[in-house]
Length: 114
Image 1 (cartoon, rainbow, N blue to C red):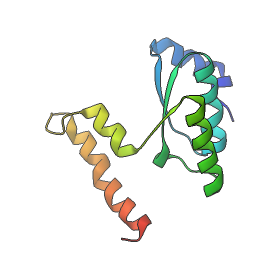
Image 2 (image 1 turned 90 degrees about the vertical axis):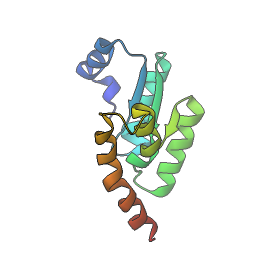
Image 3 (image 1 turned 135 degrees about the vertical axis):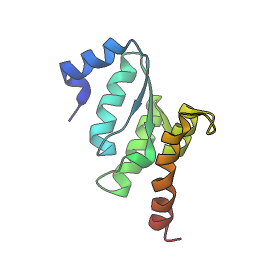
Image 4 (image 1 turned 90 degrees about the horizontal axis):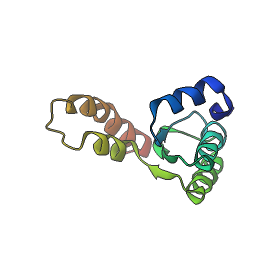
C-alpha cells in the first residue's frame, strides 16, 4: 500500500538524485497519501496531480488532498503540470503535451456534463 516502504522503489527514487517528486496513484487516501507523507518526512518536495487520482469516495479524496496539502505537498492539475513541464506549446516536444490535451478536455467536459 505504501510504495515508499518498498526498497526497490526507494532505491530507484534515490538513484535519480532528484529532490522534487511528482506523485500519482490509484487511491488518494491510501496509495498516494502514504508515500507522499513519507517522502516529505525525508526532505523531498512533493507534488501530486489531484485530477489524476481518485478516492474510494469523494469525501476520502477531499480529506486526503487536505491532509497532503497540510503536510506540505503541492496539489496540481494535469493541465497545469503538463504546461509547467513543456512551457512552450510551440516547441518540438509540445506534441506530447497536445496528446494529453486531446483526450483530457473532452473527458472533463463529459464528466462535468457539458
